[in-house]
Each structure stands twice: as structure tokens, then as C-alpha cells.
Image (cartoon, rainbow, N blue to C red; front, top):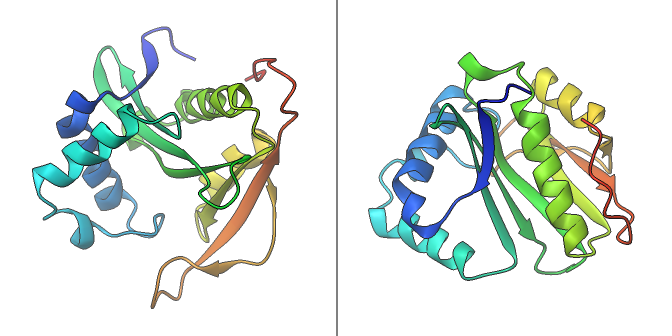
Length: 178
């Protein structure tokens, strides 16, 4: 990965950058997420502020921002599963199209996996939308495997999302090899 790329946890005062990244992601890849630009673009600033405030005060959330030369170019949001505390859910994974192919997605995945291992999690899981071949290849390269039947991406959608899972050895703290 390029040395001017950094992956960092977003703090509560990063809410405006988070909002901008999230809306860019939804506009760029409307068929890749469980939500839509229409559903999120008019959310008040307080929504974005409180989401990151809650994440900052919790050890159950990991909102990540990827930056290139200090400019935000990607995001990922990981969260401990409410019903299965040993499982980490990964949402909102996105890299700006101008910065794809530079290892940013794998670096964010590595950060999520290291965090999951620090919590002694047994798995990281996500859903990848049908038609997202590049995303599927990244997840497969990172060791994720399909886990279960594809399901609707969101209510009323004809698009499907394939559940994927990465099994972890919760006793291992070895960093990923990407």
C-alpha cells in the first residue's frame, strides 16, 4: 500500500467528513449498500454527530476513515453484533473510485480484523451486493467465504446481497498478511 495512505478510527469531531464520505459512497455505488442516498442525504447534522459520539464512547464500534495525503478517500464501519458478541459486522465499506486498486480496501479490512481479534471475536461477517464483482474479489482475497443464501439487499429491492464470513482464531493476534 502507498505510504501516504493512512487508516484511522474516526473521532466524534470527524462527523462532517464521515457524512461527506458516506454520501459520496451512496452516490457512487447506489446498488452496493443496504441504504440509499435518498434515505441519508437529508439526515440532520445531529444524526451524524451522535453516531460518531456513540461510536467514540463505545468499544463496540469501529468507524474507519482512509486518507491519502490527509484527504479522506474511503470508509468502513465495523460493529460488534448485538445478538452474537463474538461476531463483528462490517458495513459501509467503500473506496473512492480514483483511489481503488491501491490496497486501501485490504488495509481497512486488516484494521477491522485486528480490532476483531483484539476483542477475541470468532468471525467477521458482511454482505456483498450482487454485481459487485470487484468487492467480492477483495473479500475472497482477504479470506472471506460465502455463508448462506443471498437475500434482498434492502426492502423492496430486486438486488441480492451475499452473506460472507471470515472465521477468526480469537487467540491469534497475528496481523493479516496483505
